[in-house]
Amino acid sequence: MNDKKNIIDPVKLIKYYKLINHNLIYNNKAINRYKKDSFEISADKLDNLDKLKKAIHNIRNCSLKDNAKNMVFSDGNPRSKIMLIGEAPGANEDEEGLPFVGRAGALLDKMLSAINLDRKKVYISNIINYRPPENRRPTDEEIRRYLPFITKHIEIINPKILVLLGSTAMNSLIGDEVVISKMRGKWIEKNFGNCKTSVIITFHPAFLMRQPAQKKMAWIDLKMIRDKKI
Ligand code: URA
Image 1 (cartoon, helix red, strand yellow):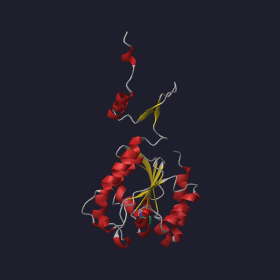
Image 2 (tube, protein in one colour; image 1 turned 45 degrees about the vertical axis):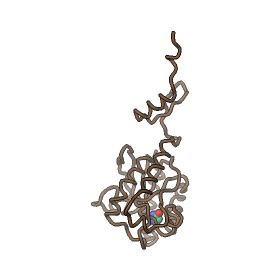
Image 3 (tube, helix red, strand yellow; image 1 turned 90 degrees about the vertical axis):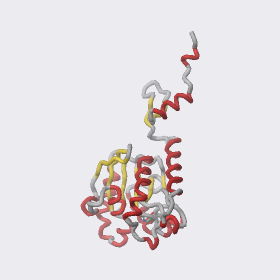
Image 4 (tube, helix red, strand yellow; image 1 turned 60 degrees about the vertical axis):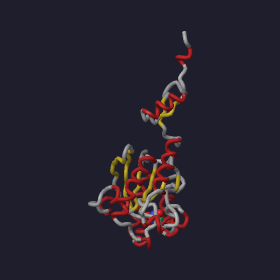
């Protein structure tokens, strides 16, 4: 008998898994031999994030990009089950190349710590990756241009919980016809490509700084996130 026949070539096996998009990693244990890829960042995930970053970096004829100092891609843990999305970078974020590092970011950090989370444990990005001049709201055209990138970003991270901070994130990803006062504080099941996730909308921290009376509503939303079984 030819023993070689029974030896599985690992290179071929990996190619096969990639081919069938298996998204599973092999586990030696007798039971549960195929274990879902939920704790490890797969090489593919980091690779995909890298490709996405490059694609954004290669955008042409975009005045936001041309006027910004840095691309603001993300912060936090790509393995996190919780992803938060804001609107667009401000001056501090543009300077540092990281989302939510200014005053709104300080409030966001406090909101997260109120439910025992910190920014290094969640994953944070924005609808738009470059700072709009004077911190103006991004135009519809700008949002349309960046929407495929943030949608892909969500798909790659594949969070169990997606928190949309403010109306821009909500209207861009859920639809124009909805208003935040009606939509906040509810779970919405939504698919982004292959990612099926539970979405919750809450107020943007910059709005809460202007309207502190609304913090009590944001607290309700935060407790929903804290208590969600994932
Ligand atoms: N506001 C946002 O929406 N995003 C940031 O990164 C900073 C402020």
